[in-house]
Length: 280
Length: 96
Image 1 (spheres, rainbow over the protein chains, first blue to last red):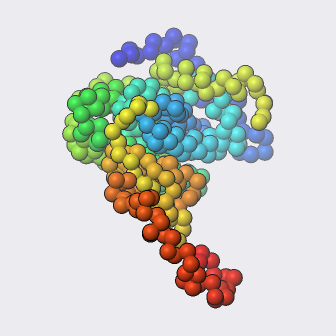
Image 2: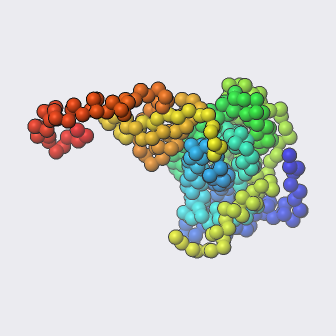
Image 3: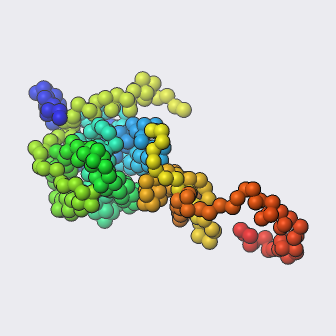
């Protein structure tokens, strides 16, 4: 189990400043259009980065899954997520989501820590997927009533995709938990690995508070009980118990990431950064 | 992919759109019916190929014996009157 990353003081400071100082150029809207409000921009990045980073992680399974069919399943989930990321990050940056995806550094990413966690074995990947898709599904369901037109449209499209992600992850969690001694053990270990990153999904900081106050987005604490009951239900069917509480690890939403995100970004970003402006 | 995993084979049938019948499109490996359906969905309907799916365990399909093909199928060869080719079919009627 990795320990908390130790941050240098100036790095902390930089992360705190980043949302306000325009450390990343993409945040400044083109002349002629109104700049997005900070909290709205930030919310789009959270949605988009969650989807982008998990999509990239799932893509790592391509060619390595336990069976050809599972390979396709995971790649399909990944492509759904990359599509959602393209929408959210594109809307955040005047239609140019690629600039955000490929030209930001670790500290500028706003995804939760759960999605950047390594794939581990298949069971750990399924545990991560179950814990994230269940949350994302409820969130999109709630967001599909948002008074904000863009969020409503994104949610309406994504909620169907994620309903399937949640379903597939649940089915696999049940089969692994209710399978052999080895598969049940691995499933329990996978859940154990991911569990400390779950509280972050329900964290409400000042940026999110502002969005909630404007009644544009749901307060995740409003569906926390529903979430844990759903997870408990799936795990009960899998013959597994909820993992014991662990010390929560937070920080992804402010750019304080685990050591796993950097290498992921290096792989994902190296081509566009090595050959800027190339086309194919 | 590990060699010799013990998942059974399932035959996959896709209905392209309402009104058409399900057609055989291929097969998938899966441990049980629900995942067979998921695998069929993920393998064969990625490009909007269908609106409905069937999966059937391959071993549940009863197949004719190729050695019997002569006695089963050859006698139909000279029964041309069984084809509805003596009618004019309007151009608007599809899928006949």
